[in-house]
Image (cartoon, rainbow, N blue to C red; front, top):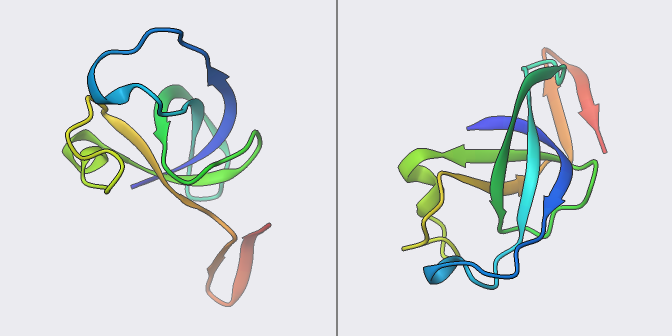
Length: 95
């Protein structure tokens, strides 16, 4: 799993297979301190994320293990909206 920040969306009028009807968002990788990394990627959104949300993503075969993405051709899926991250009794992120 990887932390990310929603930085954009993808509009597509034609999609193949079971991906039709699913939202696609652009997510920027974040490190463990939520600092942006230089990589962005397209994700299927399963949690109704919004622009600017901190999210948790799964990739590879794990991306296809949610109820929504089973059998969908995706390598990246948003699986959680992050509300709080804490470490060693201090909050790193709080929505």
